[in-house]
Length: 498
Image 1 (cartoon, helix red, strand yellow):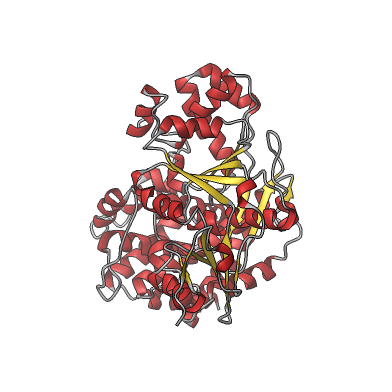
Image 2: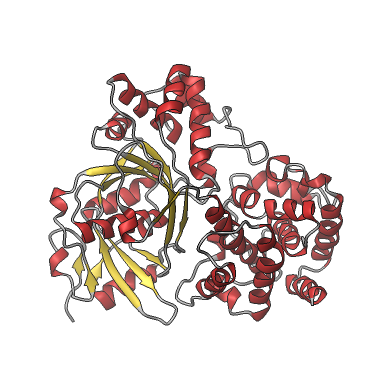
């Protein structure tokens, strides 16, 4: 058997024909984008679009320099360096077809904790037109209840006291924009690629709050000069598994230490609001619009909320993956009813989108048996996700007198999940959340006070004051604690709707 080739620039054109690879000259590519947070999603989405752009048009201005803000990013940095910043993207189709492509748009990687000054200089470099972010919902450092920037965060306090030795994204953005301003250079665009509604507006508010505390004059300059386009991003990208690495080795003849897997579907809707030049991503499928609001609300309230519905209910039931949930008719029906009865009625019209077709597409995507999207990943940092993905649907339906039962059961399940940390069969669940201790403490008092979980104001705000909601929630959470058979409660809700 022929020995597999290590993925690097030297071996790029020796790879098997079944593996697509860049045909553009990577040695001519310049860094036009500095990206913070080089995880799987960035590599399956923005870096993919940019690779496609360079492959299609031959442009060399938009290479990506990745940046890791934490020492935990050292591993991905070391692997990328060994592979000349190349990596494999495995696209898994529902019917079993696998497409493998090497992505070449990432051309450098820097670890900020090793050399903060170098990262600041790279961001402020004249060729850098965009600094983009995938830092997860929790990385924006805001209170879910108030939406205000958390100035008490120890890393934020460090950055305020040490402007040239930052730890947070806000410290790096402020320091690099200060360098641009000090030499009279136009600023770069700050582009969030995270699953947050109005992600550009959120980034702008958080950065201005930080900058105003550090340098009010700079904050006023940022407010006037810097653009923060809102965007809606979408591509299901599970965590890479050892079997993905093995597949590349044995089936494709490629040794790649950290490939990325994803579904075939991809979407990027962006407000065309940039400080200067930008990539022509619309030539490779991205959509530029005047207002992204209806698109992102649709995606957050249907796809992201749908993931949380399956993630929390499925975890307690004992399912392991999203496609495993969708193979269960009870879960598939429950999800579609949530979308139809609770999420859709509070959505705005979306130009060019048929919502029924969009939901049909989501059902197909979630059921893709080749995308083993682990429920533990879906439930990561639920305290950052649910206040944006699910709770607004509940509050809007309370206002309009709509259905809340489907979403309320998810909140009750989250309480049980946070308290017990096990499925209904007692299998341990891997709970990862910045507020894990607070969630556990609030949930643990439920047998004495059924509303104790809802009193965690940074997560639920004033939801505990809505009597219609608390009556429904109390009935559900009490039933769940008496018998953690989540399927029985789901069946009750479905039967009641018929």
